Length: 301
Image (tube, rainbow, N blue to C red; front, side, top):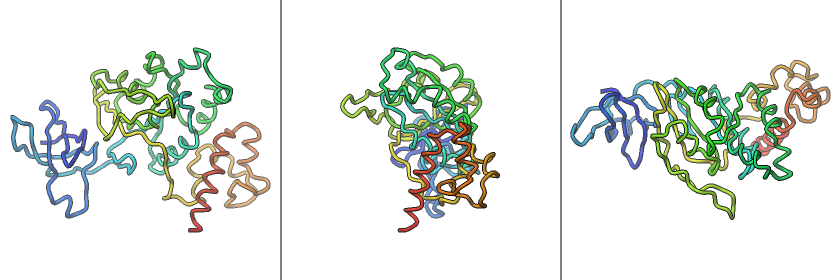
């Protein structure tokens, strides 16, 4: 039988077979021998060992469309990265790191900023007002990303996101405490996920998701929930390749005086000129500079 791995825990792979249900399966030893590990999202073939107990064995991993290392999932159509617009304030450097990962995988990305209701209540701080919705939208829309603002708690702005994930397998990712589980509950109420509470002391979420898991959210529509992340290294890229991970740079690079311009200290740089004109977000460019120097330092060691 053919099915899809929807969860993997402690050596067991839970395989959903259309019309049959979910089977708890072990993977055959042959996969270990060839250093292949089944991933959540894999389409697989299984042999049924006990129909009554819904137990089986994974016998074949079908060809993957793609795979991600972090989170470790396969056969993804797009990524949805969720940050809170406030409480906690969005770490845009972390957001850019994730987008770079997705650019390297040629995976389309949706960006959602949750907790828009906090701004509506007038509780924003001075620093949060700088990161207004308009500022955030312009920063990432110029890079070709679809940007959504919503309140999962108030169920506002959900329908636009629902349309964006319809008919696709979407991996959701974001730091803890931004409302990822609440959003999944809105998109797939049957998931009935624990939302967890925010620690008032450190303004970070308690980790409610421990394993990547697929959730059905409609016909041919799947959501992959993944554990929250708080840091993301980019060791598999050189500083010379970094600019290509910022799509909004491409149109302005022909105006750089020097071939191979790093867009840092060179004169007559098309990218820096575009930043000054407001055609490229200064937020994005400042993050580029930080990451460029990080990669430059890493090469020394």
